[in-house]
Structure formats: C-alpha cells, structure tokens
Image (cartoon, rainbow, N blue to C red; front, top):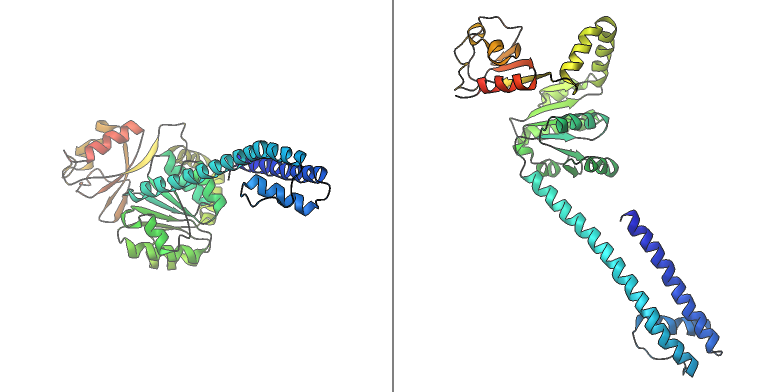
Length: 335
C-alpha cells in the first residue's frame, strides 16, 4: 500500500467514526428514552441499509433525522467504500501484472547473467552489468534490497538463491554465467554446485570471505573465486608502490568518462584471422585495438609473440576504444 493509500485510509476511517458517532449522538438527543446501544444499533443498521427495522418506534423528529442520515450518511459511506476499494484494487492489479510481466521477461532470458545477492558486492556487479547493457537477473531474499533493485529498473526475483526452484525461475539452464555474492561461503558453494548441476556450461564466479573456502568452491564447479579482502589488499599495496599502473587499470576498466576498455573477443571458425599469425593479421592497423593476450585451448599467452597463429575458438584479450573493439569483433567473426 502506498503512502497516498495509507493517508486515504486514515482519513476515511476518521470520517466514518465521526459519522457513526454523530448518528448515535443524534438519536440519543432526539429519542430521550433510548440507550447509547440502541442509538448505535440504529445508526449502524441505517448506514448499512440492512433494513432490520427500528429498535423502538421513531418520533417524527427521529424519522426526519433518519432520512437525512440515509441520504447524507449512506452516500458518504458508499463513496468511502468504493473509493478505497478502487485504490486497493488498482494497487493489487498493478502489482499483479507487474510481477507477471517481470516473470515473462525473465523466462525469455537467454545467455544472461545471474547475480545472487544484492548486498554491496552484488550491487556493484549489477551496476556494471546495467552500465554495459549485459542482460541479467538479480536474486535477493531481503525485501528492502529487492525493492532497491526494482527501483533501479532491474529484473529481480525475491527468494533464496540456494533454492533450486528459485534458480530455475531465474532460467539458470539458459544462463551464461552466475555470480555468487552472498556473505556466507557455504551458501555460495551450494549455489555453485546447484548451478553446475542445472547447466554444465555456465561460468560460475564466487565471492569468498575466508581463504579456506576457495578450494571447496572450485570443487563445487566455480571457475573463479574472488576474495574482496585479498583484492582490496593488493590494490592498496599497488596504490602505494605503482600508483600510475593502478590509475591506468582504473581508467581502462572502470572509468566511464574515457572511451577505453578491456574486452575478450572469440575468434570464430570462419574468421579471416584463422590461420594467420599475429604479425600477418596486422590487427593494430586493421582495427586499432591492442592485443594483450591470447587464450588457446585454455592456455593463456600474455604479451603474445608475433608468430602466434590464430585458430577458431581462440579468445583475444584486447584493449581499445569502443569503435576499435567493434572493428576487432567484426574481424574475429565469420566472413
């Protein structure tokens, strides 16, 4: 119920109480031999229009008062009830259809990301996905955090991410990746295990509060395990010893004010790059992007040799502006 609905409810309740009290007082003032209970009963039956009959024979002034109470009081009462019922109906209908539309949008998601938990870490992940137009859905158990995600225009499922039915509602079978950001290591491990059971190709990234949990998460199926404390410590050390390097990475990875980012781009089997070496492909001149690493069959070659030969399925780690990376993606795709 909205604040406006609550205000209306309070105002109408007060008006109804005044109406009943006025009717009761009126009957007691007109019909001298009536008790307060008789007057209250007559007021309620008159306003409710149930027609049970008079408690005692009414005097002429009593009948006149009853007619005014019927015309005025019943009219006001019906207005109050109809308006408040409409407010409740509209609120419920909006929520109902809103939930149905969101469930339908989630059901249609494919190759999307799932963010389990909308705490501080989860919010950062979701914000990054939203800024880069990556399709995703958030799973959050807290109603307050769920509302916060909804206010940001995100797709949200209110529920426990460790529940198999909730993961299925997030369309985990069709998801490309899942990020487990819950503060409980055991819960993140369980989610990783469940997600791997539903989708053997899904990329799983887990947050680990305790260093000892990393091995368990990897055994459960996590590809990457990240400890916020270790990352924070390394960044703080780098900020002291290599401040320019850290500044460069921040610009390349996180600063939306600069048109520069790191991207991974897969080479398809029909690409013109297949069979060519890094030197012969002349990627820098063709696209403007800089190749920092090449992943071939799971082996990452940093600062690759000019003689490295590209194959279908290789993944390029490239640095460049958005237009440069777009041109590189076209080179890496089928002719």
